[in-house]
Image (cartoon, rainbow, N blue to C red; front, side, top):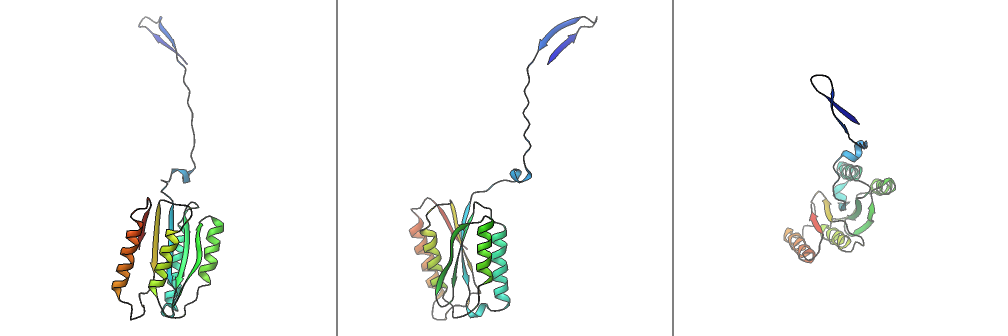
Length: 178
């Protein structure tokens, strides 16, 4: 790039040569969205008899809403409970294949049996605690109508949560129960 300054009488005053490099990179609009840290979510879903009908529909829709909003670097696992608890899916990446896997599981859930939230939460805690690879943020999301066996006092859930917190204090990861 040549820059020539002219004096008032029209003669060339200075001649300077500059070198200028410009690099332009156009980013995809998805790249412009602020990326967040990857998350691990374990859904602890109530499939007891009291969840039949509209509640089961809402449960399925809620899980699929979560799945839809997760990124391929996020992972999701599902624990269901009624009278007993079952791991339906260990933590899997939420890429297209993972989302299809979860969708099949979710739409095959049926309401039946009694309710034992404690068994479901204990299994969800174990899944989070024993995961092989670590995302920095892990959450357990309890989805239930809250109708539990009448002989299990609410106090037991508080004790369960406190015990989990004690176990996780030495961990470098963050865990949240919702």
